[in-house]
Image (tube, rainbow, N blue to C red; front, side, top):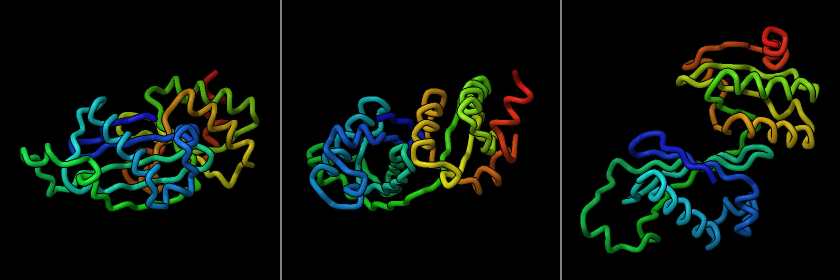
Length: 199
């Protein structure tokens, strides 16, 4: 489980399928209101407080993006109406976690890299696996590699994600957001272009 603070009132949690399996949760369970899922959310909120100082109070908006073969990205946003009065301290966390949950399944494979060298390292291994696809963007001082899962078999996708996870972090950005707010570095066949120009 990886946690990242996006703003004062928003965090992103990346859960691998191993994280879910360890807790006896199937991907489909995230759509259901079951105790195990509540426990997972409580654990996420406790970790968010301990690691990021993200205090939960009042209603939360929770967006869950199921990503092919990678896991799930959970975006948690505190409501603007959140109040942090002393009375809240006495409430049980279950009462505080009033959640509005949105679930989406995405067929995109999208990874963010801190440095160009990380993208290049991943690209060289991907090329040896006969992967050529991808679009590369620059967004928020990071490099983002975007691929469509339709281009790969399930086994290829697992291998691909295994490599990408070593060099970068899964994100739920859409290509449309990248094209509008980011800068397109390589529009198509990013893996091939990177390996051709950078040895």
